[in-house]
Image 1: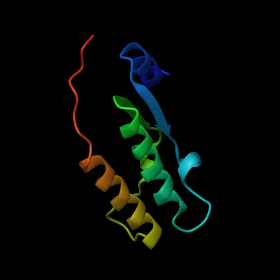
Image 2 (image 1 turned 120 degrees about the horizontal axis):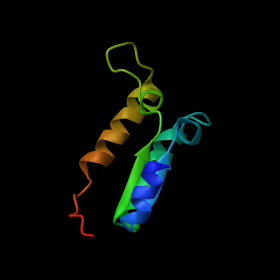
Image 3 (image 1 turned 60 degrees about the horizontal axis):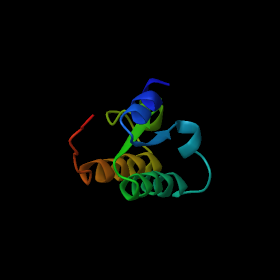
Length: 90
């Protein structure tokens, strides 16, 4: 609720990402969903992307990872590195 309130008060588009929204489904679907959220957020900039239960979304890279986990983490890192900061004005 706090993230949604911040987005509303700062007039930002709000995009929550939860494990239930992303994980599961067909092979490669999670990566496509992550990409889709970031594309929508960029199209409707300025935006706030809220990652709910981030530890469930992106597993610890120290253990054994499936190919799916590696692709998901890599896609997220690609999307985050492509973000451009904006200055906040009230």
